[in-house]
Length: 125
Image (cartoon, rainbow, N blue to C red; front, side, top):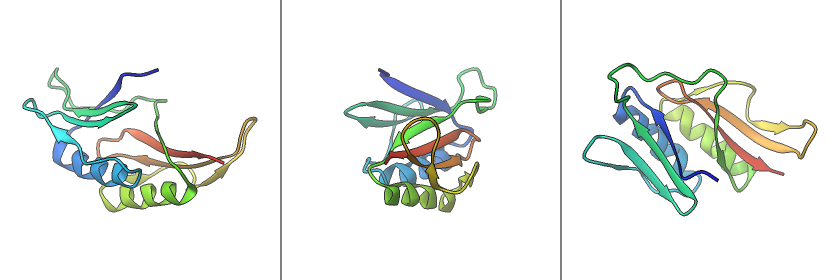
């Protein structure tokens, strides 16, 4: 459905360190910086990218926005969360674990990245 997702970053080095660590736990290689200072994570399914805002204003998170990353197991979700906290992220929402609603059971973890963007790792049980 999506070709790419790009989010703002205030400190590219801190953001790249964070995303290199969390995405490595999901089997993705480190991001690549382009000549404009943007960072790209290329996958067969699409691209995840970081950029400093082109308007010169600070990056800010979207209120109500979450970007979810697919995980292959609950253990991968836990490793993702631990890597994020160890590399400048902050935990948010409930601790990693099972969530049940009207649909399938999910194993989730949420973090805020160094710029405040809310992200999630999700495994469908």
